[in-house]
Structure formats: C-alpha cells, structure tokens
Length: 224
Ligand SMILES: Nc1ncnc2c1ncn2[C@@H]1O[C@H](COP(=O)(O)OP(=O)(O)OP(=O)(O)O)[C@@H](O)[C@H]1O
Image 1 (spheres, protein in one colour):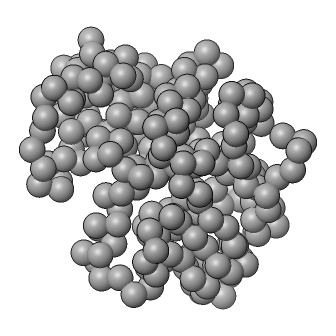
Image 2 (cartoon, protein in one colour; image 1 turned 60 degrees about the horizontal axis):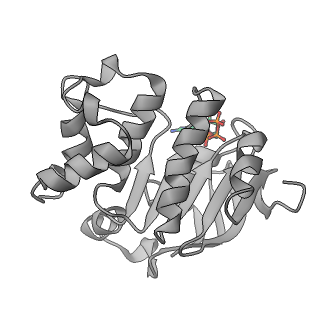
C-alpha cells in the first residue's frame, strides 16, 4: 500500500538525510519505525503521506506513483492515510469534538453525530467532547489526535512518537487503541525510539520493526 524503492530525500540539495530506502507497508500489518533522535523518522513518515516527495527513487502510495500525481491526486490519497502528528496540532479555540471532526468538514463530508459519539467513546473522551484542547491532559490530547486521524476511516494510520510525553500506563492505553485498529485490518506505522514499548506491543501482535541507521532503512531482527 505504501512502497518505497531506492528512495532518497534531503531537505537541502546535495545533502541527503535518507538514502536508498526500500520498504513496503503491508496491508493489515503493524509496523514500528525506530532510530535515534534526528535520524529521520518524522521525515520518513512525511514521505509516506506525500507531504514530502523523494529527491530520487520511486514512492508509490496505494499503487500510484506520487511523482505523477497532481495536487488534487495527492489530496485524495491523503484521505486514505490517517496521521497522528508529534505535536497534536489542534485548533485551541474549537472544542475537542469539532477538532476531531475537522477532516470531515475539510473534505466536504457531513458529520455523523452517532459515529462521532462512538468514536469519542472509543478513545474514552465522551466527557471531554465540549472541552477546549488546552484543558486536556497529554494522554487525552493523543487520544483525541488518534480519533481525528481515523475519522475518515483511513486504510493506513501513521503515528509519530504518539507516546513521547506519556507515562507507561497511558502509553500502553494508546498503543492498545492502535492494536485494536490494526485488528480491524488497518495498516499501522508507529515511529518511536522506545524499545520497551515495541517489545510490549510485539508480545500482543505480530509487528515488523524498521530501523533507520546511517541514513538507510533496515528490518530489525529478533533482538526486539
Ligand atoms: N523542514 C525541515 N527543514 C530542514 N531540516 C529539517 C526539517 N525537518 C527536519 N529537519 C532535519 O532533518 C533531520 C531529521 O529530522 P526528523 O524530525 O525527521 O528526525 P526524527 O528521527 O523524527 O527525530 P526525533 O526522534 O527527534 O523526532 C534533523 O536533523 C532535522 O533537523
């Protein structure tokens, strides 16, 4: 569903951050992306939803080569990819429910009140539907961000360090939601440097671990 063949990327011409990356996100599979701070995890995620385009190599998303896509084509493709950003990026003056529903209004779809109620219930934020984002705890913000990422029923969910500021219990609660999503058939990719988190999830679900090292991408072995 997302495939990279020999993809390289640099923010500045002549200086590559990532090079020779070949990988595919498998439908229905749980994936982790790990690597040291600054190694390029966020950058790789941004490539996965065509927020950045490769400097060289081939990137296909849902079978379409992104190099040949118009802006509208890229916008259509992004609707099938739910993203939980590292900084949750809420509009602080809008209540949680309206923030979660934003992808619907942006894509011109009506809000389904019943579905919204179910979604907020799933992330255990029913009580906070009318709250403003600044009043939420870190875990609540991440769960709201996850609800917003899945409101368009994407095929793939990408989460960038979603547990970065959370304690262990809250981190596992969030990962549990991602595991549940994965069990409904969605491909999930979680960027994290927390190897204990990867081990805890791998004890519950089969997961592939990709590691960025030296600007390239490797499949991590049995040590995880
Ligand atoms: N928009 C940008 N313009 C220029 N350089 C950037 C930009 N975004 C990131 N970088 C640089 O690219 C490198 C990789 O950043 P990236 O955020 O992808 O790493 P990361 O592995 O996600 O890091 P962390 O684990 O700390 O979040 C860093 O050196 C960063 O400073």
